[in-house]
Image (cartoon, rainbow, N blue to C red):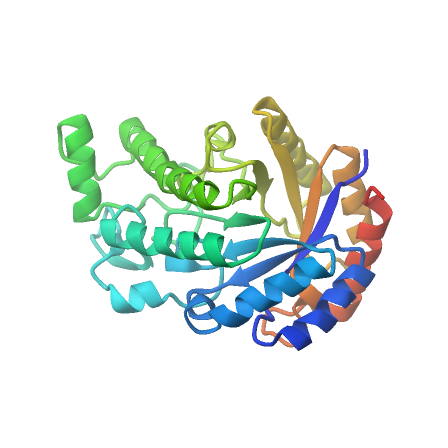
Length: 343
């Protein structure tokens, strides 16, 4: 089975005449789509050119998706958050220590209004084909994994707003332990904001395709990150997405893991009548033999992946996250796309 869509993420939003040359390079590398990574600063400062860049990409035949990149540090991504700078009282709070973290609590009224305003403005003014929910997640207070509890035993968010909401729903104070009720509450609330945003977008631009990309983790009995979007079936059957997507895998992982994650992704998407998407790592890390990129793309295509993207344009060339052979990785991605893309 051939892949129907191939694409790459892109940061170059400053000048449309520069983006035009980059878009032609994407087309030459067998891309049919581009994902515009929009930070809060980009949206605040470069908005006129975001509109121009998106319009030029579409004129050249690329499908355009808007990535709410790093917004509130609730979504994945390196850029800092203006919301966190201006709203220090709306941070996620560690359940165990009560420490405020560098991530917005996306349940608060202030953040929801901020995020919905961004979505509605983009939907109304930017000629794009859809939106990309980029690795939404609760912050992890600890950075190491525990075989019994995932990424440490601490979790978020137990701020005053979350505690009041939990008590209003369940009738008692939110525990400090990650009980089944707390897990359910976190998952429900995590999906609620995405579902509400998707409805607002489609009210303005009904044809918008919404992609929800969750972390590609095992979520097993022994190790789970409890990021709030761990129940893939719950995410895929929701109104938060039309395309179910799972994130990049390190080339250092065994190929059996690539196959397992991809099979689960395809199965979940099909079970709920959604398209499926997988990603190639095109930055920071690379396989010793760049031909492996084509092998992985071929594997994804054979397993039924319909949309295949790579992060990021030119292998991250010129950034601190560039692959060691960034331009070689970019060429390998282009060759892989050309091999698996349905013409």
